Image 1 (cartoon, helix red, strand yellow):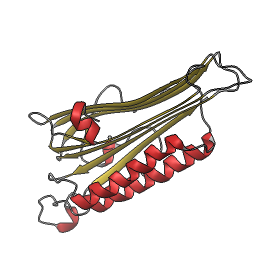
Image 2 (cartoon, one colour):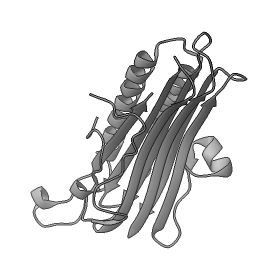
Image 3 (tube, helix red, strand yellow):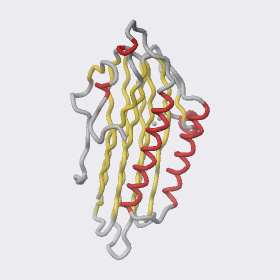
Length: 235
């Protein structure tokens, strides 16, 4: 997949759109293959919305420079929301390398994983997933920004059980470990994709046990859906 430098990617359809169940929850980026603030963010599991409206804004930012030649940051947070009629979720990764020399280049890596669960049959969803990587007066430097946004939509509310949360915690630790890796930028990106695939599998398995929607015809009942948005930028 070719990369466009310094490219911002937004969901098609303007600032907001109407999500009529699962299919229309899709966005830009690669198809199916999170973060609150304060103590909940540190724990990795967000709290619920107020009166059926949810807002999540998560990010990872790095700046490498002569004082800090190698920088890495990841964000991995889960927001578990119940029944919603509206949600605005934003996820962003930004990596910048600045003013290092060709003889002593810098490396900057930012990876943000945002996981959101929500329930409803007619949700107004505004989902934005962005990445930006830039080398500023930095010959020979490397910058990588990767944003992964996982949206789990179910007809009725459910919560991730203890087993699923433990599995996600294992993935989070593996993501943290990438910060200690000396692997190439290309390999870091590949490993991040592998971890994203593991998250998607965990969420799909968990959502499969969610209560189904009402309906006379079982084939017409609404099914859980996991949508993944993936955006990378590299410089």
